[in-house]
Image: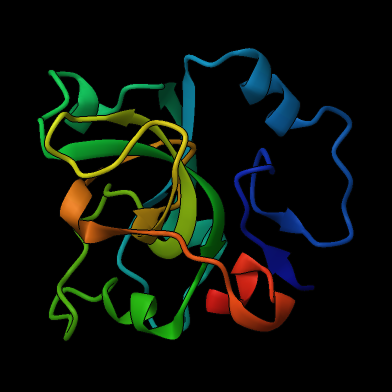
Length: 162
C-alpha cells in the first residue's frame, strides 16, 4: 500500500486509513508541542518510512532553540513543505549534498510564517519566508538562509514555487 508521511499523522500510516483524533488539532491546542520527523537510521536501498524515519514529539523549543534566539535567526512554522529527490541523497553517510546525522530533523524546502525573529535577522514576525526548513512544527534557521516569500505570477499560488 501507498505510505504517507505527514506531520498531521500520529504514525506512518496507509493513505486510506483514517485517524479518530486529529494530531493537528491536538498540537494546535497545545502550543508547547513540536512534532518533527527525524532520520531514525540510514536507509538501506529504497527509503522505508517505517524503518528510516520517526515522528517524535517534544517541547516547542528543540535543542537548538533552548538557549536565546540569536540576533540573526528566525523561528518559522512551516505551512507547506516539498520533499525533493535530492533530500534522499542526504540520508547516506557519504552524501553528495552533505550528510544528515542520524537523529536530525529531516530537511525540506518550503515556506512558512515567522513566529520569532532576531533583531538582525532581516525578517519580521508574521511575515512569510521560503527556503530550506525542516519537517517540524517549528524550525530555527538563519535569517539570511530564508527569503521573503513573493507573489507568484499569473495567479499561481505559493505551492507553484515548490
